[in-house]
Image (tube, rainbow, N blue to C red):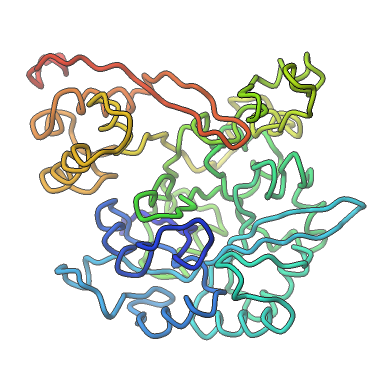
Length: 420
């Protein structure tokens, strides 16, 4: 069965998240996006875990339906939930403070309860949906695998400067350096919004391991910014087996942000509104030329720093990927708006109703159909994004980048635009 999965999200129990990101909101949002398997996020939080226990019922092994759904769809057509959570490990190793975020994917509520009971003995899990543990990431790996070897343990947004396994501010140079003899139990890395597989394939661990892409959504609207496309059984164990084996027959591709749009792509200093390429950073001695403070070294620079292959190298058996711009952004730009207004929201919902879920519109729907069923300037924007015909201002030091395109405002017939 072909389906789209987004494993890494957050709930209303995490800091800086929308209150609409509950089970009902997630189900509605996943249906609009075309996501079949959606992470629960935050299963370590006691309040959220109680909601999961009270509202989820197993539909297939390790996958769940919301039994209090308001959806009119039949069960077979509704999104499935998979039990996931992000954990922040902050600790000292090899004389440096390390800050590593980890995504856990678990096979059952019983396993999650054991994880929460074990971690809750020493740490406050109520403080945030993404708890901060003063625990070595290697020790966390050993702890959860002792509870269940079926747990998938994934270093999150693996090149983000501040909180990742390879981050320039607090990370390591390799999986081995971080996890030691337990490295053999790391099967996947998460790309993060500021990196795509082509950047991570330059790195030895990125060549060896499976690369997952997820939204890290803090609101329902941000679901599916990045995602994974499978042709596998709708079953936790088949999904995890596909990931562990890097099976490109069952794992078809990832769907990626343009990494330049991520907020840590370039080097820079937000306070001075300054950003630059890695080559320019070297010229400035990694100092901000405006104030002299250290630049925040971004993902592009860091990925090059620990690479052993040039950009453009594709490892054997690699999972392909596609870059997208989320449909709300395309609509907003095509209509010449500064933000996703009510007008843009109406266009978005009409497109979903007339054409299908967002991912179908962005990736699979025939362009002729898109031109027939929406405004020509919006259809042109979708076509340009599919072709990679975009202009980009890279993000840096916490500032999101911008992906733009120009569209013609005059009305064109589909066959004129398509050249047929």
